[in-house]
Length: 403
Image (tube, rainbow, N blue to C red; front, side, top):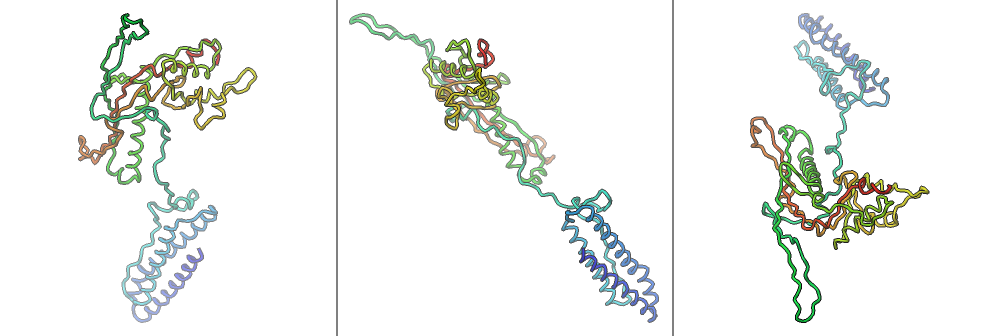
């Protein structure tokens, strides 16, 4: 501000000098040129000086009213540049007697709008925002159902496997010369069809050019959303527009193998693990919704003491029930539980892993300046051994006991 006041004082001295020069010009019979100067250049210079003084007064008022705020550097540079322009004009007047000059215009417009230092204006109006990189969005699901299944790759549209059915075991001890027992079974061909999960979004070329990180955002965001739909299909299946059988649709229904008349949620899950073990499988995961996971932590006895098993309370990073890892995942519906031998029960095949592609020649994209972004994947899920899984819900399981 001191520099601006100094400039104003210098301009005042220059104007006085200009007036003196004009008087000398009048004495030298340059009346015509002096009249032109008074009516044009001198008037413009004086108006510019008054305008500058008015702006400085307003800046001082705004600065006092908004202590601690800084006037935009760009605005100050603009103001200083215009002061220098007026100085240059004054210097030209001093060195060219009686000539006609172009008076530099003093502009009060800064950045993209008109600066109007009224009572509602603050210095923060002209401070450029500090943009942070990237695009903010909700977090992705940390784990997916495919993470618990063995995976494979296929180049076909169908996964065909042979399943044993109606096995009748005739093996046994026999006396010499006696007839052996006959074993019979059927072999059935089962097919798991490859299905497509996809979505698309349309964007203008300008959006892709003008929004930093938009391409990277779409490349990460869309496939993650495809994976969420994949989770739903792997667990609960799809009925339309085609059939895709999910694990819970094939799994054995929960039955209270322990036959305890007073059960809680821990008892239910331990009973489900026992049911899987009865089928000669080894359960390697218990999947529940996060709400049910934390409800397990809240179970108390009649004296108000928490009933968490020792493995749950003091075990490894992954809590365990009956030695089986307990997994909290929002892919499971609230109130449901799924216990199983995921390593033997099913397998996920990728015909096309989740990907994203950009198309310019889609419909009328070219004439509209639009790009179609497509994300899709193709998968198949053969469920080899349905009895390797036990599926149920806590409400039904606790119907004969108390939580």
